[in-house]
Amino acid sequence: MKHSYRIVAVVLVLAAGLVTAACGASSTAKYSNTYSVSSAAAEPAAAAEMGEVAEMDMAADADGVMSTAQGAQQITDPSRKLIRRIYLGVETLDFDGLNSSINEQISALGGYVEQSEVSGRSGYNGKGYSHGGTRYAHLVARIPKDKVDGFIQTVSELGNVTTRQESVEDITLDYVDVDSHKKALLIEQERLLALLEKAEAVEDIIALEQRLSDVRYQLESYESQLRTYDNQVDYSTVTLDINEVERVTPVEEKTVWSRMQTGFSESLYQIGEGCKDFAVGFVVNLPYLLIVAVIILVLVLILRAVTRKNRRKPSAPSNPPEDLGQPKQ
Image (cartoon, rainbow, N blue to C red; front, side, top):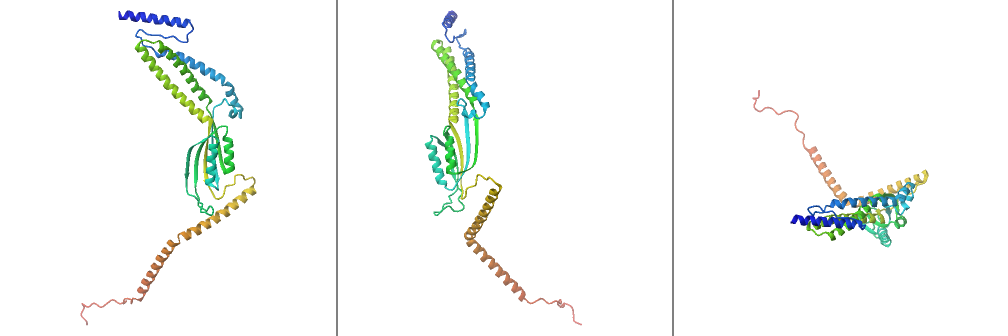
């Protein structure tokens, strides 16, 4: 009797599926003799949709792909997904002022500081910067992509940029692929929800809900990846290494004569700084030098006293003493 009810239920479900297909519905449900719904019935359709969506996206993006072969258009083409990373090595005489100005500029442009580190000690002594200031700052900033060039120009004006490196990573194909998977999963989710509304058997409901849970989990993963891509594309990464110096390094050297002048001037500067360091070190270590000098003087006096004492001792007789045990003749 129970088997007969199952057969009747299967016939009714199949008939309902045929009627739905005749009316132009997007999908049909197929049930087995054990009332278990196979996820393979939904997955081929989702896979087909995913392929169609991917083809549509790739066709829509074909103009952008072909434009990459034209060099400069790759960066200006808005359809491309480009991650831009820039590195700047900066020297400054005003360490505190430069750091403050850079942070203010980042906030004004709508960016944010992702990482910041300051180390070393200040060379400021109240009258000016003395030799020995070795402060260093490492800063990673995220700047809106349409404002990053202005930010770099501002940094170049505030400090002495000695090093600049830039890289651009094209993630267009990866972005389209992830977005296509997301769209296909959204279609599958809608179909699963429609099937879940029609399902009556407990086994069918459990199977549909399990598949629906997997689809939602994959959707969240793809959406998180797309958000990460969007953040990396919309906000360029600018890494700055800021060094506090007494003299900035000349960036442009045009002729051999200018290079000779710069080298000669740098040598004189280093000699002068070396003499200053020697004088400072001598004065700083003078108490230790005095202690060492006293110790050496004491040792010399002791050595001279011992030497004089040895000289005053009478010399031993050269002839050996007579043997007392032998009788005299």
